[in-house]
Image: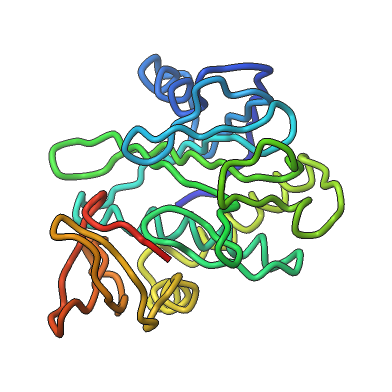
Length: 242
């Protein structure tokens, strides 16, 4: 896949960078690797319709457009894995150890610092194009959501949004050059998976239970040891209580 970031569009205010990007795709006005960046996002979205709140001008709210993805629908998890690890790589560069809380959140300790929303354009059973939405808390200190943090809260320093953006793009391009399906990508993902091999409290349709995350299935479902049995959970089928 070709590199990203050659074209960057900055918007003062938009409802959602993913919505804006989707409209450009429909009109054929977007090239692969384009980055859509918003100073203010008035209706940011998370996974399964959740809202993403961000103070104007303090954080990184953006979407990346990937063309010619050519992944089967069954392999869409590779896109989430690639995106999460690129963010992890960026945070490591500035001395922050982060983890991936399945399916699409980046945590430092027990606090969320970034979220991911990927939306795909399909042709039959093949992903042709992807919109990779990212919200990264950078300089926000006030009005953070519960259990959220930011680069400034962690480091005590103000961070240039431009420097964060270009460094993050560099991490994406480093991962792109490796390919999406490498064994190293799988190893790195598991190495940073939140609560992996640790007994923790979860809840599902049957109520609370003590379980242990053992990995992620190639389908993207979370593998959890529950009552001595390995169970696969999809989106919104399991809640982390820890």
